[in-house]
Image (cartoon, rainbow, N blue to C red):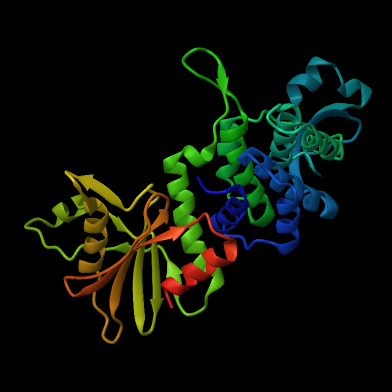
Length: 343
C-alpha cells in the first residue's frame, strides 16, 4: 500500500503532470488518512483554479420560441402552435456558455462528494461551498461511468484532463458498491492491482520523461526477428510493447515495471525470480535490432513491499538488472533512486 503522502506524486506523474509546490503544501497540510480525502483535495484545488480563470466554455444546443430567426427553424412545433401568424417561430441554435459536459460532470462529482459520509465534515463543507460558486446555468450531470467514458473519448487537454482522471478515481473510490450480503462497501483503489499496475507503469515512464534530459523516453513496439513459411502467419505473433524505452546515442535501456508484492516466487523451499517477467524482458532484448555503438540493457522494476532486491545478470550478452523501489520512503529519496537507476 503506497502511503497517502507519496500517492500524490505517483498520481501527478502518472497523469503526465509535474507536482506543484504550492499544491503539495496544501495536500501535506491536510493530513489525509484515506485516498478519497486526497482525491477530493486535488479536485478542489484544480476546480478552484478553473473558476478563477473562468470555466471552459462550449456550445450547447438550445430550443426556444423567438421573434427573430436564429439557427434552424423547427417547422413541426412552429406550425403546430400556429406561431407564424404571430410573428414567432421555434428555433434550435447553438449558444456559447459554461454548460458543457465537462463542467456538468465536475458539478455532479462535487454534489456526490458533498453528501459522502466517508469524508470529514469540514472537507464536505468545503466541497459544498465550492459547488455553490458554479454558474446557475451549469446543470450537474449524473456522476456515472457512461458520462466518464463519453468525456474520456474527447481527449481533454491540460487541467481538464487531469481533473477527469481525478474524477475517474473518485468514482471508483467514493461510490458505494453492494457486497454479497447487500451491504455497501467503499473501494480503496490502492488494492486494485490491475489499476495500480497501470498507474505505476505510467508514473515511472512519465517521471523519466519529465525529470531528465539525457534519454528520449517512449513506449515502443518491437518487431519479432522471425520468419515464416507464409507471410500472413507473422501477423499471429503477439505484440511486444515496452513499458518504457530510454534511448540515448550511447545507451539504450528497456525498462519493464511489475506491480507485484515481491519480485520472487516460492518454488518448493527456495525463492526464485518470477519466470514470465524475466522471459518477457529477455524477448524484448533478443528481438531489438542492434545499433552500433549503442549497447542495450534491460531493467525489471518492482515496488518494494516484503523484500528488497538489486540483482545484476548478463543474459544472452545483455546486462539485466532486477531491482525494487521502496515507495514508503520520503519522496526526494524515491526520485533520487529512480534517477540513479539510469545514471
